[in-house]
Amino acid sequence: MAKYIHSMIRVLNEERSVAFYDVCFGLKVADRLDFDSFTLIYLSNPETGTELELTVNKDRQTPYDLGDGYGHLAFSVDDVDAEHARLTKAGLSPRKLVDFAPAGDVIARFFFIQDPDGYEIEVLQRGGRYQ
Image 1 (cartoon, rainbow, N blue to C red):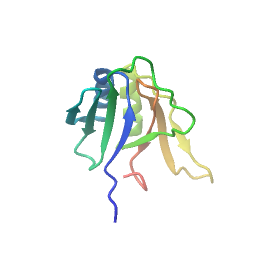
Image 2 (cartoon, one colour; image 1 turned 135 degrees about the vertical axis):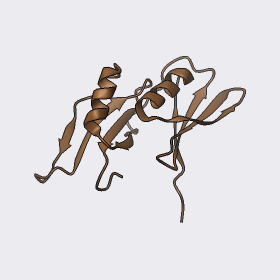
Image 3 (spheres, rainbow, N blue to C red; image 1 turned 30 degrees about the horizontal axis):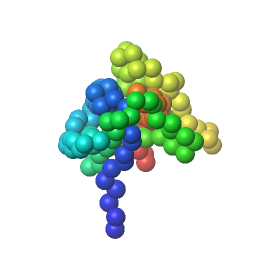
Image 4 (tube, rainbow, N blue to C red; image 1 turned 180 degrees about the vertical axis):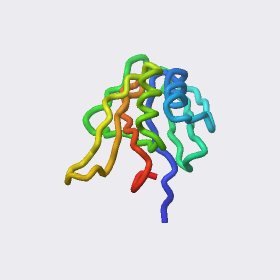
């Protein structure tokens, strides 16, 4: 059986992205590999065994075109309302909270936020399938 270990996204500014993921999700640098033309930064926290890999291409000066194939990353939290308020207070502009109820019963409560490079991140209330 395969084990999912990380996702990778390309970012323009290491400091800005590391700070964003720390403030929003408590992700800390677990490892950093520096090469001539790029740097790999692995972020994690004690809540999960997976990592988010940030790739910084050193010669890149312009934002990445995310195209139309990228969807989103997702994080679950204990209290989505409190996280929304905290991120709003921090000036990070999370979008509105949504109660997802396609058949009448709420099956998920979430909001989206964008990281400094424009990646969409879904923040879901922990519970049910979102542990």
